Length: 501
Image (cartoon, one colour):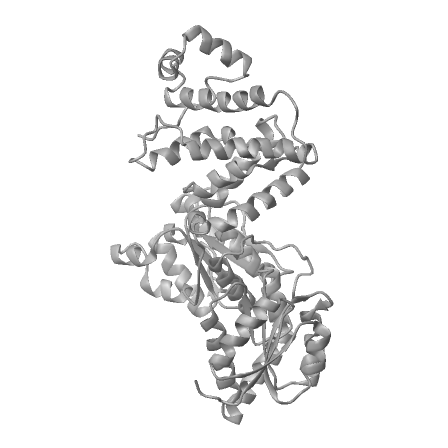
């Protein structure tokens, strides 16, 4: 360890975190002072010995981002790193708005902090001309930022993959760079595109979307560029295209990988020259729209096949953003479900909650339709089920699919661990409802009914609604099964598996 003489002020109200980060920074050779309140941080920040401030956002006595202008006025030369457990897009945007040098969402690897500090110190020690350029750019970025005042994040998720997206969007706010967003269908590419638009300088102008996969190939050029009267049969008047409609704003080209090669050539000319002509016209019209493209395809492979122009790809791929599949960020599923439920309740649906067993199942599921599939499922359950809670037995198809993903597991056997968890959740709900006192009677019948209904529903799903076969699998009389179906209110046709050919 080498003592490099650099003093760092570490401000956080969590004593454990101060200890861990302080030890890590000391081991890296830095001199560390600490503050546990925002007031103490403000008292110590004026000390010129401190070269770097590493600061939490939320303190019991205030929000550090609200003090950044004051800190900058006192110490314009101070390198500032903010860290926050409130890892949302809005936090990243506010950090950028207040011109902090770096933003680290908690938790983060210890070496990421030391590398960040080393990079900032290296920049601070740059030659005077380069340092002035950096300062001028920072001032320009701060002056140009137009931040939405809405405190609700348009994108949900605290996973590390989403944090990288938040930081990229925050950096894009004061720019007009072309962006290409990649990700599977339903992963939220358009939500990311809208966030870039809404947080940018063009936010008060139109956001116009065009899905290449949803338009007949022979109509894409006229949709994109518009057409003149008489350009083709049925063109009885001049019609604006999406470039016209998006003037001053953002043109979102969804599923760009499905754009015909001829249209790709025309789009490339627009990106190169900044002008377009309507179909059947000769007038050059200035293209004043920011381009954000998106695709679920691997464009490298499309280039190899000759179905996508490499030069267009280079024009679009100025700032790439990869949106992860939902199965790659299961830790975000609880927040997504809460967001969907709150939004659905505001739309008029009955308020519901979700049990831990159902949540566990959803976090294990592979979600081929990504966030779109999750939203459709939650909204459907909020409409169709009568219970106040969405439970595991409301997800028979999902349970079967999860079992099918484990070929070494006997599907005919019910996991004792999972069953115990369901029972524990069930009794726990009654415990909470009765303020700590278990109900004195009827718990046996209620538990049996709760286990029996999903057992029969799942068996009917496996047998595709064949009651005779379901009775054989369950080991009960067919008439007994029919009575239970009626008694438990089961629709034997509503839970059949959708088998893919």
